[in-house]
Image (cartoon, rainbow, N blue to C red; front, side, top):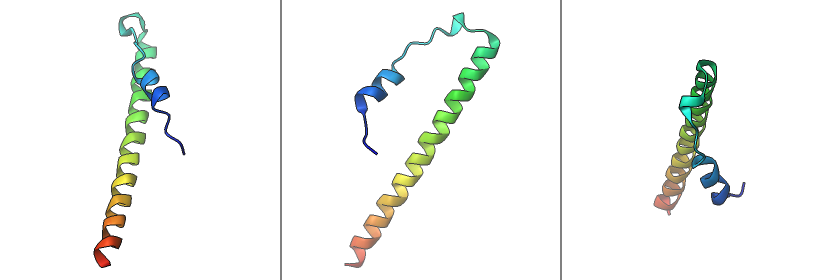
Length: 61
C-alpha cells in the first residue's frame, strides 16, 4: 500500500465546526474519530511488531 501524505494532511487538517453540528452528528463524529484512533493504534502495533521481528532477525546473524 502506497502512502499518500498529501491526502492524509488534507483529511487531517479539515476544519470541522463543532458548534454547527447536532447532538446526533457530534455523537457520530466522535464514533468516527474513535474508529480512526483504533485503526491508527492497530497500525502502530503492527509496525512495532514488524520492527521487532526485523531486529530479532539481524541479532541472530
